[in-house]
Length: 214
Image 1 (tube, rainbow, N blue to C red):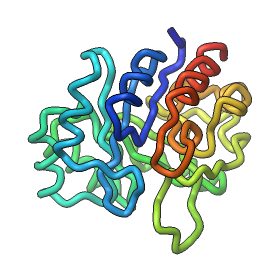
Image 2 (image 1 turned 30 degrees about the horizontal axis):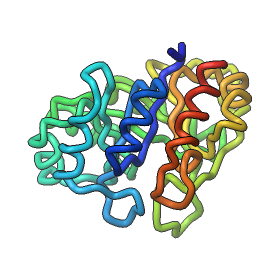
Image 3 (image 1 turned 90 degrees about the vertical axis):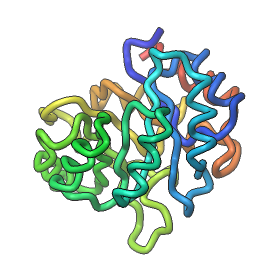
């Protein structure tokens, strides 16, 4: 079992959920965002989440969700956390946490050290900060594009509260990422795919093994 938390995100099939669980993932992620090639509807989320044992956290990834959408996701009874991947303010994030009753993560788009410093505005509003690479202006997706940021920007940063690292991670570079950042949680999506939205069971297993050796 890895000493680090591992989230395999963007899962959409029973086989890949099973592979993630068997490989030692502590968290599995389901993207509920129609523009994404990883999008799954609420019925799929319910069915896929049911495969995972109780000790595995089930995270729903959303982008600037409406209250109606939040209520639909909560009603599935399938999720233990919500990951906000849009432009949600700290106030909105806190309101989402209150309304949903779930743990709330906030993805922080990083290009410069100022982006990391600005994440402190979410202290007390969310349960975990997830540092991800900032996507190009006008990009169709806010994440999951295989981009990475300069990990040395996190060196020496005292992040207030739980946090994780995402963006451009793979079995080949995750040890370096952990060594540089000291991240306690590692989140991967495109790095364990054979094509956009198509998870590869062997890559999931290899990635988790790489993390366990960090």
